[in-house]
Length: 468
Image 1 (cartoon, rainbow, N blue to C red):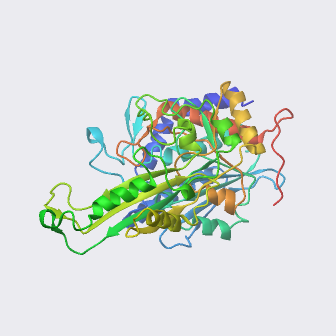
Image 2 (cartoon, helix red, strand yellow):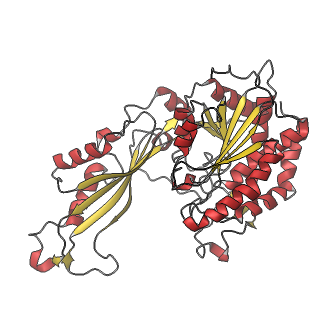
Image 3 (cartoon, rainbow, N blue to C red):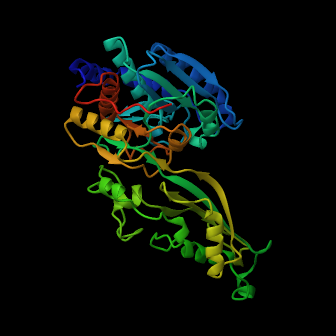
């Protein structure tokens, strides 16, 4: 069991305002990875915030250039206590999305952490600066309390997660020896809800698909030519509904997983979606109604329309447009073969009378997850439930996406994600915030896992170490 004094120190770190002060300093760096001019802020954040934090943990720190010139550098901190001890790999990302300055409520500045009750507003407060601060703090408290971690530590930070983690897979493949570990424990994404401690084991992937109906370079008067010329907007609407109907049901069999595994179904039994105050209410009759809301969100695939357009909606003219385009996104779970998605959609549309619709895959990020019966999963869930005395939600993956595949597929690690945010945190939008209550509990939960890793007991041993 985690010592009571460690729990008290973790709670006091948040209650005293020290956590808020540290997070405010982190948020003040505008590390927007989508803006080339923000690379100076990213470099400063690595040098002035993360490097000192890792040095304080007794780590040797190395900054590595990105093999992909479109991405930012990687930072790796390494602390080796003994080759005989297990090695923990932690992960975080230093970058954030666009700050959306001027669009936050009450005149808030995205780069100034501000409190409104239990909500701490600031870009990166939840995604991901607040989350990696929790893990750094828990490690620091553990080291200060017992003079050792009891395991070896590798902490990897990237600076391009919000733009698709360019170069991360290549970097991991080239530095397998540097990143060799027994398990990944990291924090990103949301909990099941604000009140429920959660472990998830991976993420859904995504495929962005462009549908382009480019019929003619000019527009033609709708009175003179209506009923004679094919309308690309009407054609696009029909093509979309042939792929995903008006009730959100995917109509292209090749875009669906082969099955919902029994282990996934069992893990999601009893899981309630949208269980926090302020969450939107799931729509009745939307998606595959043969599945529960949790199964649709965490265990199945969805095809969403991200954007569509033709003509000028705000200032329409009496003319048939010449072109219409839409971007669809397939969110998919591990086990789905998406290698032929472009061909499958094109053939599906052609067979239904839409050969004039161009189909192109724009972007793809892989799905992955650790097996639900992995020994490390049982260890982590048991550790947290023993410490909290309450159930911990176990999700096979989150509905969104993370570079989990780098750790499972490239490095061959079991992955345990302990998130310290919640679905209503407004990440990627104005008014992103971290809940103080989650931060307080999060430091305790992270310290609990790290303490158990460094202090295994006879009645709660660590899983057997895997061969290198």
